[in-house]
Image (cartoon, rainbow, N blue to C red; front, side, top):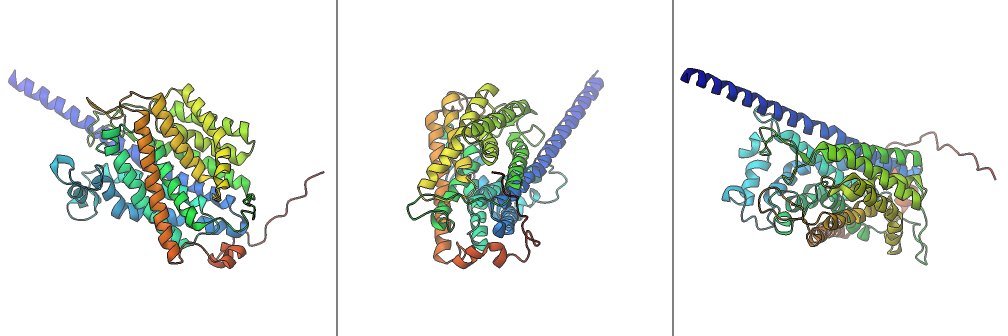
Length: 461
């Protein structure tokens, strides 16, 4: 009998081991697939911003997007991952997991040398950390792409790259440590809930861009002496709208990366959860993302009738519900997204009245709507658990407001400070003659349209 029980126990253990391995392999594949999906976001930003630029600046805008993607990868590898693991409780690094300092914990898990090398290389026993790091790296690169569109046609390439490194390697990562990490003080003390990163990715990036725009100034010809604004039209609206649609495709990978998949390397018991340990599933994404896209487009169409703003409305719709896409019912999502789509063009107009030249509406779509989404969640989901486990803090309007203020300040202060220093050293804005001639002419050893731009037939009277 004892031998039979021992054999049965061994069989059960083997089944559990096999199940854990299967779960871990599924989790590995899941995050691996989020990475190319999020790369599509960058393909979208590339097309979107090149099309929104005038022909004389099209390739220069493309080059900045390519460099933002490239530089954010090593910035996050060498520094950003360390910030995420080391700073959740604040700047003091006084207490981390198991009683050790946050700095010591971050050194052990996040830097690619010493003890942490087992997490950061081709270790066949570690199937998860590399792909999870990859998903986070694409979040970092996305922040720089969000910023880049606002600054097109007048920022220096090196200055832009420095801004991208600071934003992707530090600013958003600090916000993630405070508002996404399970030990983050915004979560544990204020109950902040930002599942889809409307605040800690989108708003941080947008307000970082706003800080840069204050120092960068508007494009030549944007504003008249009386303060009224002129519309500077990009050279290829179909390209821009197609790029926006690609960003929508990539958003599915972005939100997939916000989901924690159960596996041997995780403590979630084999189930889907948010990054906060609260339950969710992919069905919530399927319902709510599609309803957000529809609501955002319709809201923008009602107000603007312009395909650029309609597709921007799709982005705004998703961002407006991203914080609570794990909690909302689809009908509520549609209403929130409808409001977001209707809001973006008027909000962009208000920004122009302050003399801010945001070339593609990035501050409005990602910043204004990101904060709108954070605060709406504080009203509609008040009382829901913000974190898994007993005695967890709950979502509240005040908590979401505090989180919003912190995210705004992180973005605005670091963006303004970085760009102010660059401006002091003459590294922020291109010379006036270069801007007038076109950045492709003076900066890029290639031409977007070497045979000339096609001439459209005049409209019939």
